[in-house]
Image (spheres, helix red, strand yellow):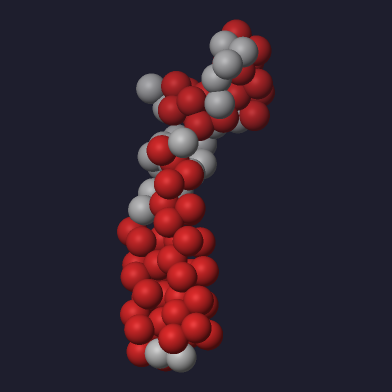
Amino acid sequence: MKKHLPTAAFFGLMILAGVVYFAAENVLLAAAVAALAVTIWGFTPSGFGHVPKRGPVVSPKELREYRRQHPGATIADAIEHAGR
């Protein structure tokens, strides 16, 4: 749930900006709410998880072998492990 909170906040604030624009007819306030939404969206990490650091080029065979040995591992885990 925590990783979806910034996305929910972004869409909630964008909807609020639309409501403010149409209900209150206040363009400046609607733009400020929309700017806040974009700021939150821009400064929060992705919901896809961590991005592996750039390391040595790893062959696909090594990645497949690592993931075969560790069934729950992600591709990022395999790349990180192969770089060690």
